[in-house]
Amino acid sequence: MSGALVDAMIAGAAGSTALNMTTYLDMVARARPASGTPDAAAGRLADAAHVDLGPSEPAANRRAGLGPLLGYGLGVGAAVGFALLTRGRRPPLPVSATVLGLGVMALSDGGMTALGVTDPRRWSRVDWLSDLVPHLVYGVVAAATWNRLRPATPWRG
Image (cartoon, rainbow, N blue to C red; front, side, top):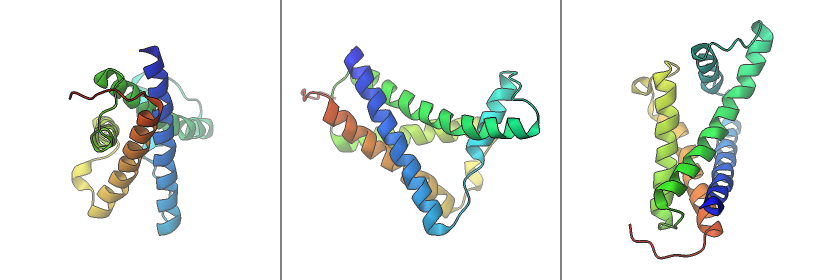
């Protein structure tokens, strides 16, 4: 199973990179600023863990670094969870992509909602789409990478 976990980490990193590239392309296309929610989530987590990030400016810089690292950690961790769930096998690509993409979206948005960083009930359609599309791209890329790395074995749901 250790080979499957390494493959999952690679798939999660590839998916996370694709998610970020999709987000950056959206920022370019719509000339929108970067989201502050990853930084805010990092700050809330540091506060909850009683970790002092330092004075004002260094703390802001640390939050700006920690936010994306949390996202990569979530993306890699979700793919590892997927590998454990599937016992290292390859479900059909549409199934894998949907489970991975919507799973990461639920974990990410759920975590930030629990931390009080965002409230999806107040999101507009554009907000939902700008969150959904990158997560679905994550799912497709992570699932395709997973399937490429794993030997073909019969899938029995």
